Image 1 (spheres, rainbow, N blue to C red):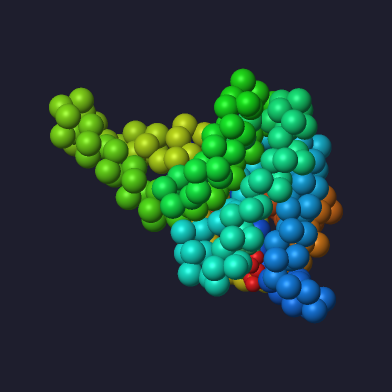
Image 2: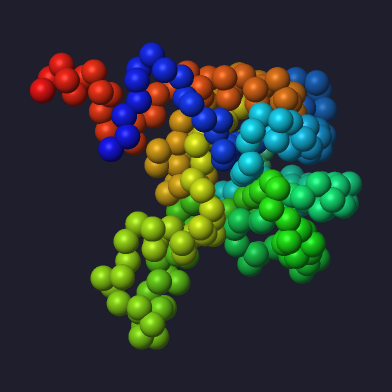
Length: 251
Ligand code: IPE
Ligand code: MG
């Protein structure tokens, strides 16, 4: 089991950062604007954050764009949220493609309009050959639903005689999640002051560090990502193990 000296900061940059993009509505309200403008401003923050990540040695970025629970918002707001991927990809897909970014959209395609599904599939297809940076957008995503889906897939393999229950271990199960064989997030960030995971990457965040920041997502940018990563460096990750000195002290 790896042990880490308590005095020593994290040696490695967080390879995979996940962000719950939150606070769009409050940002708009403070300005006397409709919530839709908060969501649009949030797309600009996403652009800034994606641009800043590689310089901070981040290679995987997963953002929570729309949760399975967000369907309960007023219809007009849901339509605005549904329009955000189009807004983002229309302005940025060509650049992402050129910059070597591979885009993956996590979550259920069922329930989304045919046009939107086409656009999400196109973003994945056009960037499928890239491997410099990985951008995962969780859209119509719920962590519990994703776990249930993985369980269903494995059960179907058993029913079809291609697997037996004993084949399932943590790694095999994780491979059935929509995050597949990708790395787990080292750092999960939630801006806007809320301190909840809200059904984001439930399985994958088992050993993640959490950083909560008092900034609303539409104001988010490179300096906030850098501050969250600075905080990550100060944390000590033990993965259930012990710090060497404590082990010696207690025998
Ligand atoms: C995040 O901002 C966008 C989504 C959850 C889709 P919110 O809309 O949740 O903003 P607040 O929490 O009301 O400020
Ligand atoms: Mg919110």
